[in-house]
Image (cartoon, rainbow, N blue to C red; front, side, top):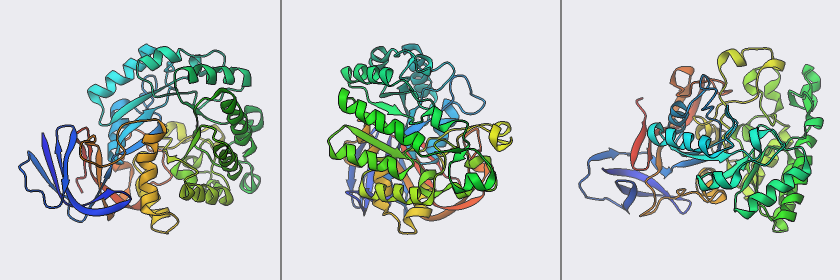
Length: 424
């Protein structure tokens, strides 16, 4: 199928240039001004911008085992709604994705029913129990792009070093959720002034920083590729800065909510502000924004974590951690960071496209002739109210509910197929 997209501005080399795009089956065949060719479908994208399809290195699809929260069909539909053409599925499913059969199940379901590419991240330890190394090599032969016990953290430094040494033998990146359980305790929000004010137990930044410091040292010793998930404190960022200066192979990601929200959002006990790592101080938020601008933070990842209403509608202490994020990542960051001139549009787009592709060596992330036909078409000026009714995820646990957000996704095209079209 040939698709011709006309009259849009195309994002290339960090600039928006007016041009047309011709898609021929699964590839971008031609990019040029005023293309006059026949096509099976013509999209008039006047007034809109075309960006590479977004890539999310950190999403929870809950399939298998918790499909009442999300599944591969609804999760990838939510991804397409948010302009994402590729997502990496975390392994904390039931059962845990720690073997080749589980990897193949997710890949098959995604290929048959998905609205975006799904790359599988295998568990670092068996059952993510932090006791025994998983079948990394076998899973690598089956196509995993990384290993992680995300949601859990290997507490035993000796085991973590063994994981790194083993993974480095097969060139498998390791993604860590940095949390020292003893320091974090039963904390619910960031350990700071708000936790004291509202009487909730706090999770200190030190709980994250201690593990990051440890794992950077282990990565230096083992030569493993270390990627730090959802980094959230200024001191954590300084540790990464020092590691990169020494040439240690360390990368990191930040979530939209840690770039925009702070611990103050938890004052009203809204469980849609409860996540791990917790929302930090304004000083930490500003440090994350600056690190993104400087290129210290490599990419933005959603940490899309769906939970059912009955799970979130509990007292704060008993509600699960996590929020959905695939459908709001670009609009929220465009509104709160780009329109307020805290970062440039190019900084935002690169952190959602070419940078995550580079971190895990994934295809896509740019618009050029011959590249995969993965792209998203966005009206930067059009605003949409984010309501439970227009959420495509099964779950609605978002702090952005009923907010008007600019940067409306009009079309998402993945592998040459239209996977989302705005009906508004």
